[in-house]
Length: 319
Image (tube, rainbow, N blue to C red):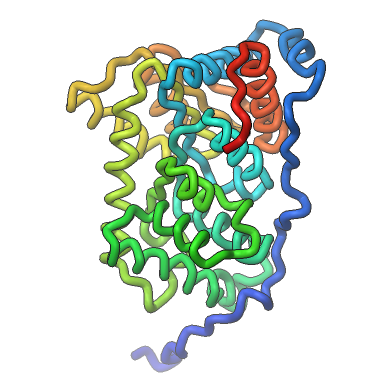
């Protein structure tokens, strides 16, 4: 050991109640039924560039719902951090979303929201003293779900959803994973090891985590295999989900399941290389890119889908 170095001390894991959270449930988006006059306003938007692309996405999502086709949604964690889970859950309950896929960070924000109605720590404040990410209840909840997945042969997303439901967490109605488990909609977590705070837990079973996220990858590939004449939306994931999607498309085509007759759309604040090439350009016959803040465009998308479906007579009540 170098002369001036210190031996490592045991990891300090703190209770979640001590943490300051930047995102709270009271700030989340509110779910509205179809608003009178909204569809007229939406259809009056110019048929040019972004608004034209958004209109196309809405039309194709509703058409896919009418025809019983796949409508998958890939998420980055920021989508949940800006309070959009209620809108996504409403679309799931109404049958407009048939698969939700995301990374490990989204699962953490989802679980913490279900547990305490708040999430997202101040990284800049907590990093200097090494307290960033070391939260006991988050470790116990998420890595407990990982252990459950290993014991029961479940995918990671399903295990997280069932853990939230069976634990009767107080804000489970705000959990995308809990709602997916309740509705029997596939929700998959695609983990990049070392990217998530739960990987810093010395008690994490890495083998169970790898097996659970591998199960989710194949569940995801099965959904992509049903994507012909459907829609896939990538919202706020710049790297992980576009890469996973591209591999799943290749699996589906290798199996002889998938052509190119489906729509993809990428929603993000910036144009990112992987999302544009792997989601919008390479796989489909038609792809759209819509650049806007998530907390603005997703409420518009939600309301436009509901109003369009109502006008077509195919809007279901939430299950």
